[in-house]
Length: 419
Image (cartoon, rainbow, N blue to C red; front, side):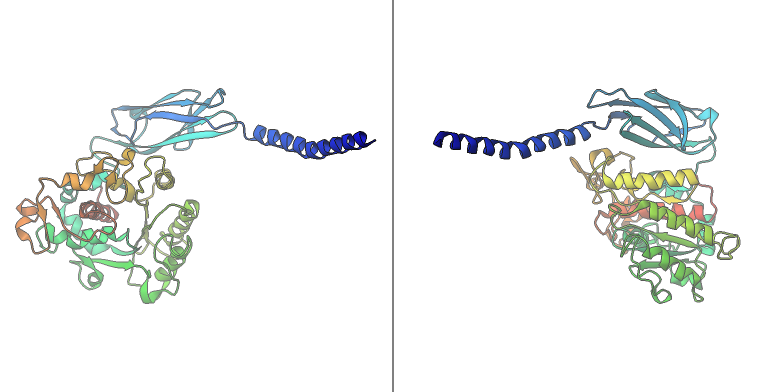
């Protein structure tokens, strides 16, 4: 009798323990089944950087992709959002069949459940005219600055009235601009500030390093993401609509760190502002007082081509290409040294450091430095190659390049077709 009781207790224990265990095993198997399929992976692509060609050339784009589960893959190629190729691993762009301009070339790879993709920005120029509304490292050389005709520099100062909202990273532009005129010879050519309101020899420029709009706004906005993704747009509208607005016709904002911010919201706000303040828009502007808006990318972050910042920046580039918008490509400028060596694939960061070195400190070796605005012996007319200036988070050379590109941008906004 005693043995039977013990045996019964043992059976009950086994049943009690085994029932939840069985359910756990079943549920685990079901969970594993639901997550068993993996996304395809683009293992390599060519070209490695965004290409530029002229109207007589072709450009080949190639990818190699695999699927961790061995699933068959389908490929789709798109040119500015229009499908141009299916189930091929190579797409060839023929410039002879397409006009000059900037194109978004995108490939999607899918296993039927998940998608991986890659995007290139392709620039096509004809033999005499270069597209100018996308400002990149191609416009950030000292030679690019010097290529701007003096009459267009004067036109910038006579016709533009710029308001710029930013925090520390965005100050790299204005810090470079501050010492630029001294570097170029101190002839009051590249000067800017509020004084331009009463003096056409000065670019009228309102530099809002935090607190955009000053006394003309009650909406607190510091940069494109501070204090949130919407405040800058409200502050912009309030500033432009204020009866004491000084006649601003160009609006620029920059990011602190673009990671984590809603790019779709940024693009929507920009398009709404463009629609409202363009000639014929809802704000009642015409061709004499319409406002131009400059899109901008965020700084590089050391995560490379597939990092969050670059993926965010690509969304902005693709939008500007597709919609023919003006873009100051902050990240692209700091992805190259002045000799056009590329570093984004080497995980370059905002301090110009990359895996293996720092392109700014390497480039200045053996170059002539203007150490201060009073160091006229080493300015550009006397053989200077670069100059000291403020440079939050980065090397002064980076601010130099951004100053060159800024004046190139201003000249195109004033109507110059570029060089």
